[in-house]
Image (tube, rainbow, N blue to C red; front, side, top):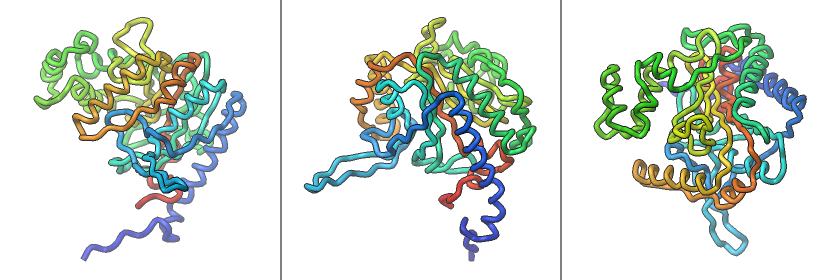
Length: 342
């Protein structure tokens, strides 16, 4: 007979987690203070949306709104507050942040939860370099608030007080996998051949994006954020549906990710403000989702209209629970969630 797991509300189990939860509260309070000093307004975007987001590999929770006349309207719990926050930029807000509950299906594990908190913020009239600087400041403040001079995870360590190293995706792929990524962009056969030569196995049905993802997860990500945090930037444009194209190289997009001890903590970019290109990118994502998973989500037409009215801006989405987990010394995301699912 298998013994039932102790529920999260068991007094002993809660006592084991309580220091992490207190650190969570302290970090949130400190970050709210930091955003206030930076003249941000904390927004509260609604969770129910007509579209949960249109990234092909994110899976939403579906529901419906029943009207007083018993009419039924499909709705979703958002996978990110991004669409709502960008509408606020179009409305004229210049600096906004949110600690938003978000919901993602098919996600569970030491670093994932179906319901978690996304720290998301935007600065109008800036590019992604502003978000990179913010990430370094937020990481340092979180660790300082938790009383940690070093961050450790799975045997890896990182000094959160040091400014993150900035490495382009192409340089990282060259350094850690020996592959000339830029020479293969858009050429599935060339990237598959390069991956095979590097000893990275890929399936015959893998797309270019699948191979790229395999290279990242197998060779690049485990080597990032060691000693100090790493900012991996300038992703292939095909892997950045909501980001602005690079002015230096149109094959790339102004997107970055922050890594700490091999863990991806944040994803940010210069915002795409070309509504026609944004529509095309999201439609392509949904076509891929339909082909891969047999479903698609509607486009938010109100969001696409807002994109055309947005100013140049930069934004970042940070997994607040992951940040707390790393900054506090927890080893599993469930330790820093007040009421985990399991």
